[in-house]
Image 1: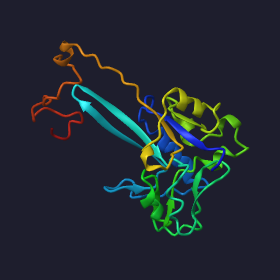
Image 2: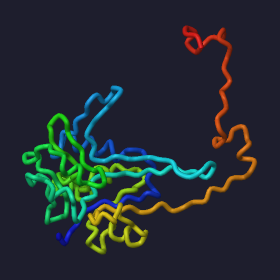
Image 3: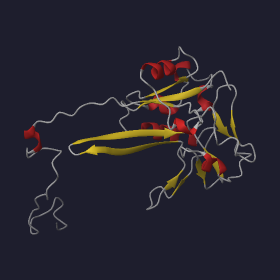
Image 4: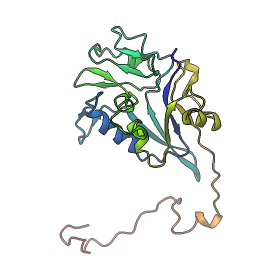
Length: 245
């Protein structure tokens, strides 16, 4: 096991679900060392594509006490990655130097064993190239000495507007990532699987919603169930005075 483990720490209390991490990841990696990240029918009825990072958004609670949760997810760079031992060609491997899990495209035969073994659904199959792809923590960027040192971070970290993503060595107790985990009750995703994910999440801090009774009956109350909107007569002109209502 490596003495160094690079990873991401994601603050779920800060993430606003803007998808800046998704788009910046796609932009950097599709033209970089791990690219291309192909898209199939991106504007069609059934778009498909390769993304190293995705944001899942869902609502929870019971009206009116509801909340929206944004959950970014990518490869967790597990310390015991189940995708590595199942690979028949050795294409999936974990680096000793920094703990990053990578895929050697030249060895990958697209059998998808790694995808089936990953309990987090973090693997992406490129239908064009016929190989499996995944987050690399922008390994081609973080070691690039031509880039200013303070910019040698994954594209998603640099792009996050509210700074919900932290990058660093979680085995270094003095790193920003380690301190964030230690001081904010950081947790691993599904630890019961025994994969020891390197990426950690910082939990949402519960904020009580206080509503006055009149707020639920006001005409402009955004929480009230929407009624049918008023409609003009069919004979009324439209904005362009061409089409009918």
